[in-house]
Image 1: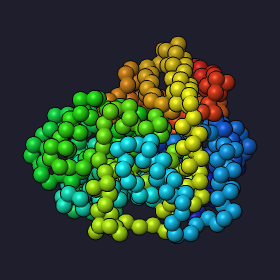
Image 2: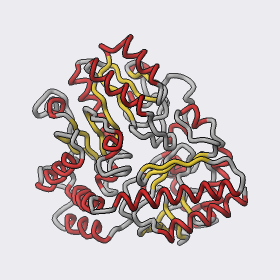
Image 3: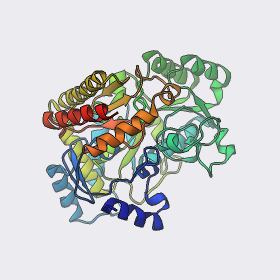
Length: 430
């Protein structure tokens, strides 16, 4: 038994399933999770000191690479003055100003500690602002694990849940809560129009992953986005862009800057904390002013705006704002996808790829899917074989066919070439 197996066995005695977030358990792909001991740039090392090229980058945040020296220095400096105050700091103002500057739709912002907190709070705020209860979300989109959002949800839930019913994707979620959440197919304009025609006056908010990353990478059609923006505006519903994953990952201004959409509220996380537990939600001042202490919508948190996380976030945002950063990141990700596609074609394996900025998806299918239903029809068995073959070659992919992948600025030509070589070997083995 290797050290990873030993640790996994030990972990299962005190941690449910041996992991602190379900998809890490390798349940969809089988085998033993890799326990990480350290990481640097595009690599991490496991408990057996084997080096892997990392293609999840902590599920998105490590866009400048692991343990970037400038970020490490900023974190160390902040830590020397204490880890938490539970009181305001100037750093929080600086980070808020930077977020509002990078995303013009965000006039005011409130910081929290996780993406789930951000989406949960944004929904409460939307309901408080409109005085309505009904929420629309889309099939296969994951917005954290707040109760009313765990209906036909994406991410690890696609691996674990029976999503055949319009019922909670998780145990412990009351059906009563779920009746306030309508789930529509992603990219279905007609369904959206029908719901607004029948229930427009009851809809508090529409929440969307503007580029879905929790049922693999799925891009929205421009007609779908246009219909959503005009229908929410017409009926006085709040449009919430969940950019926890896409914010600063696909472009400096997030997915909204690429799509030309101005949402009413935006949820952020991951990159904005540079890998620290940090998230935020923000938007129109008129809506944000309903939050306590100004309004009657309550939200609070001891660790919100944590000084160490703020330091990490500020430095990360500074690095990604430098000239040429996104051009380089996008080019490397596209190069990687083209190489994988070419290797699969050579091996005569049906394979499709897509990417935006430093976020990518690949699918064992003849074309890129556009909905949750199409994703479920891709060849999951082929994915499992590919995942393990790549793992053997020292490339760490998301251990689920339902997750997008992520590169960093540290994934240079040499790293990309190594991944493509590994893929050529993996496809041959299949």
